[in-house]
Image 1 (cartoon, rainbow, N blue to C red):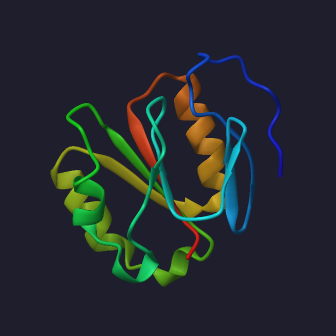
Image 2: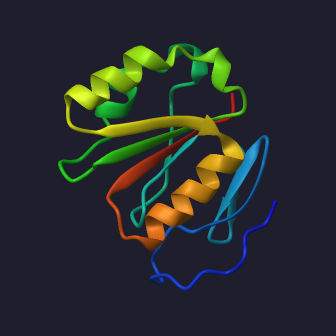
Length: 123
């Protein structure tokens, strides 16, 4: 699915389109697990759904992150409660959602200039 053009900062990591196995940020397609911040460099995510834990998120956070999006094809394959409650204890909001919802939410948070990270886990 493709998104309509939004007017954002030139260095923003806008999600342009997605499939069940990839996400296109600005003009680059990523068909592997990635961490997408609002503006900085996109990072390949070394973990997958099977070994994804709170520590996988925390090691990628900086002090300003207030919200984390975890995007999966199958949201039922991950035990959400421990991850979300542990992040909440750190004062960080978290949401686990399907790829399409995550892409839309990412772009909305980006337009609001919020401090967040999006984890896209395809594998």
